[in-house]
Image 1 (tube, rainbow, N blue to C red):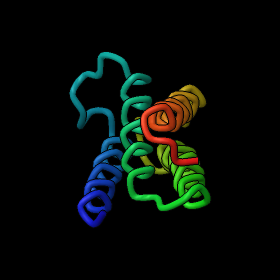
Image 2: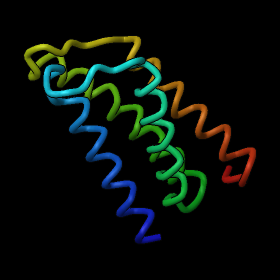
Image 3: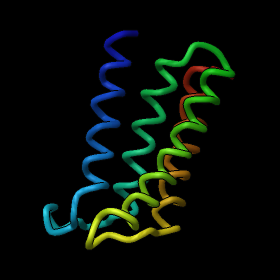
Length: 110
């Protein structure tokens, strides 16, 4: 459980850093929306591994949705060559929903 929490923290830090640095600092990205989808799917899977019970699992997933929205807002407000994008939020949400469904099929949590 502690290892899962540490891994979740490291993954969340990597996603935040990747999303909040200027584009010129990043290598060319082949498909930005897929990276958003995959990043938030991984975060959701890790969060669901940490969660104990249905309410906590739903809280983690809601927290990830809010974090994805907040990251987009911060990009538009703080990062010079980045902007707010609804499609990024949609990709984040799709990744979270996919992970929730996929983990439900493998190990029922709800």
